[in-house]
Length: 151
Image (cartoon, rainbow, N blue to C red):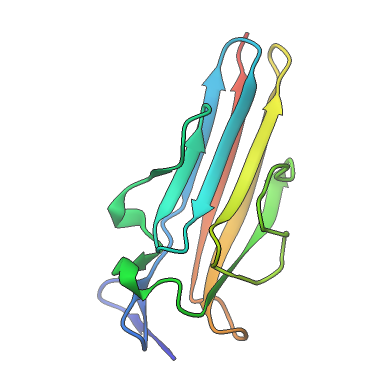
């Protein structure tokens, strides 16, 4: 069971974790020939992370974690993504579009490619989280992954 708090605009599950998604744009824009990558990581520890420019996954911001306190994760939360516009994610790990899946292990929605000069790939999708293996999403937000070679 979940409760919507009108005063704060967030969802709180009966287990005590506050579930919220803030939306985010993840970019890898640069020059030169290399593997470009922009990815969103839904961590089974409750943290939202990004991967860009060949770097390791890093926390976006503790205020944008998908469940607070993080100790409420992974519990029996599930997530799914729905591609809205642009290119389909092409390097996603343990994720299939429009399929609910447990948030364990970490789930990665990924856009990556070796780009030609002035080439780009862009993905715009909704991410949803729900508690349990059935029912409606308790949090939804729109995210963008953008990779672009400008020269």
